[in-house]
Length: 287
Image 1 (cartoon, rainbow, N blue to C red):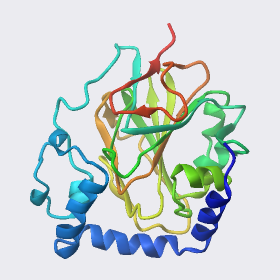
Image 2 (tube, helix red, strand yellow):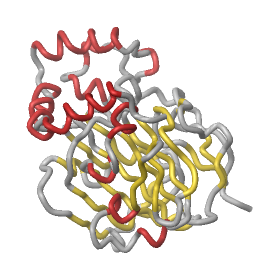
Image 3 (cartoon, rainbow, N blue to C red):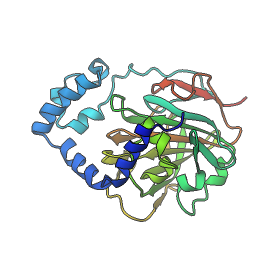
């Protein structure tokens, strides 16, 4: 679907907004223990129809600030793991923005828009060639979704790349309107060595996403910085199991998954616009 006039106006407004300044304000508010927590948290639960019965701690009063509530842990049985040993699972709750084949080294964003692996993974990255003609999935997390991110399969951490950028909204209207959106927003690229070859999990920031963190490194951003930062983990031997938590968004955003050529086959349910939940079967390793 092409961007409508309202989509384009919404995008234009975002272009002039001070993204990082607004996100710094949101970071402070979501970590405050006072009036904002007491007023905003119950409103948020009502507005987005949050099912607190799935949370390990169901009483919102017990969360010391809004961010602790927003990144709440779920009960152990809230997200059953689907498929078998050769299955990949969805790393997040959300919706499929797009999924399918990478065309040479370009990823489809929305009708009329695509972007390059090189732009997404950061300048001078050696990784685009590893994912050329592979597969991708762009998974959008709305405000109501669970915001911890899990492993789609077991992997050994190889490298983390923090790419500074803008913080446009990643909702569907903006995706239809802003060219190369996911390669323009600030993002944290995590590369894993797996049984099916290299896998990338790209954690894309957005407006009011005040922080992105991983379980091995803690908070990666802020600060946003101005230059690309890289961390080589090859000698650290950090191995994460399938379904293990690997990171979280402190406020919501998008995960872009990248797989190499001929390394996996999608489940037929993974189509643009379809809802997904963490633990759902994404696809399988080829035999």
